[in-house]
Amino acid sequence: MKILLLYSLIQIFISNPYNLHSNSRQDADTSLGILILVNKQHKLPPGYRPYDLVPIEEKYNKGVMNLLRQEAATAFARMCSRAEADSIVLWNHSAYRSDTVQRQLYENAVERRGTEQAGRFSAQPGHSEHQTGLTVDINSTHTSFGNTPQAAWLRQYAHLFGFIERYPLQKEHITGYGYEPWHYRYVGIKAATYIIENKLTLEEYHERNGKHPENPAR
Ligand SMILES: [Zn+2]
Image 1 (cartoon, rainbow, N blue to C red):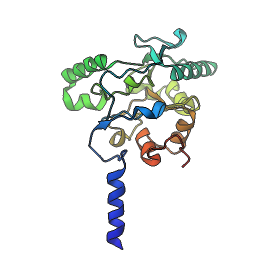
Image 2: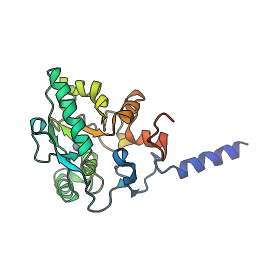
Image 3: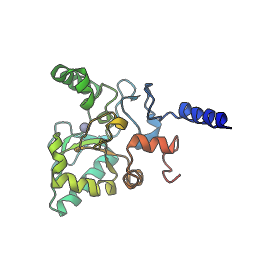
Image 4: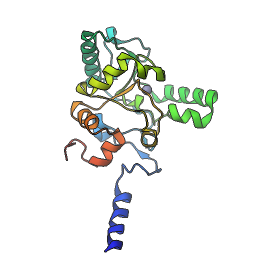
């Protein structure tokens, strides 16, 4: 009986494509739409570029890289506008990046900090969430941002607009990245609310919901 149980557990471990402990690399599943998982294990196809990138509303942009997918851009402007009503000023620092730009950033980071340190904060081309057009660095790229009223506001309300803090403190062993309180990912209100209420990362969300993440209550 015990052996049977162990066998079943091993089967589950092997068959789950979102297994957090797997080091194998695979293609990101672009059919997941706004729930797409891109990380060190899941790579976008070469040259991937979302078809519906639009500029972020000028009022909420201070970045050169100012494109997001349509739905995310609309949600971002709505979030910034709502924050403004609470006297919280939010803006885009950096949003969509092509894999060419990502390659330059990664190579610069490796040159400055060495491969190991660079890997904690910079993604290799094809492995950056910024390439999905669903990610926005808000206001800053310094860890001290985490202690500001703006970051506190985001932690409390961002999910109501469909955004999650993607690389929270003490989740590096799961996400593969150090604490980045400025890096927000659009996943839609339903998934974002589920993720926040259950204190999950996007990796854990996919692991829990398998191939049917559109039904997060499952
Ligand atoms: Zn970022």
